[in-house]
Structures are given as C-alpha cells and as structure tokens.
Length: 202
Image (cartoon, rainbow, N blue to C red; front, side, top):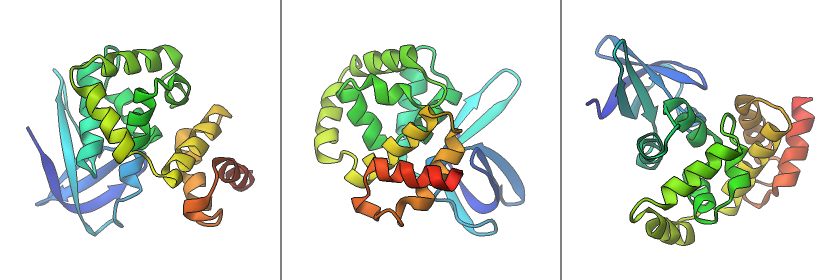
C-alpha cells in the first residue's frame, strides 16, 4: 500500500495531479479541495494517498488531509453503490465538517445536490453511515465541536446552489472561491456569494 507521495508537483488540474518522485511521475486523482491547496508546479508537495488495485490497473487517489482521505475511504468501503468516482465527488462537493453535519442532521437535500449523487444515493449514504457502529456518536461530537465554520457553510451552500442551477462543479467552486473575499470573507452570506458568482460566470 502506498501511504503518501512526496516529491515535486509536475502538473495539476482540478481532477488530477502528477507528482514527480525520484524521476517517476505518479498520476493521482484528487478532489477540488486538494487542488485548491496545491503549490505551483515545480514546488515540493506531499499527498496522502489511497491505492485502488484493479485487474487491469492500479489507481492512486490523493488528498491534502487525513480527514479527506478518511471520509473518502469511509464512503467507498461502507456505502453500497459508492465507488471512487462518487467518493471524490463528495469530498469535492462539501467540506468534511459540512458533510458530517449533514449526515448527523439527516440533511438529504444538501447531500443530494453534490454533482453525480441524487436523492436516492444521498439517502443511502446517510442511512448506511449513520448505521455504522460508533460513526453516528462520534460525528455528533465532531459536528458540535469541530463543525463547519459559518464561512465554510456559506461557501458550500453557494457552490451547491450553483450546481443546482446547472453549472459544473469545477466552475461553480472556482467562481465562489474567487468572489469569497470580495463578498466579505468570513462574514459573507451564501446568497450574496451566489449573486456575485453568477455575475462573474455571466
């Protein structure tokens, strides 16, 4: 099992990165949240990884934090019908704190707005994760002590709103991040972020 890659960032896109480790370029599939925190190409980088072994391929998935990788693994290992593609979509679509809070609150509507999920998958995710021994109790504590900040919640809500309006996840995420500081940063409301992002996208 490859636990992490540490080397030089050779290339980065919203969906994947290539990390040069000792002259070998590793293609790593990443969520948007990791892409946001990557350095410029040519700079050193460390990605925590999950290796999926298939009959005809070995696929690496990379994350900037333990929390993101843990959530990804929890989804693909415990929720029926959720593979790596949907696992990355969840980590891209909501912060770990917002997702945990949504599961604890049984907030199907927010989870189902993540690109590629839909209501039935969101219901299955919520049901199967809450039914896991210890997960619900641990997340109850996490959501109250380490839940999403108002700023994180506003950004997540704004991105999900734009996706619901038909925008692609990558462009919605990029637009909201771009207007976040101008809209008041930590004090920005989600509706204001949506309004400014729509103006930029237009």
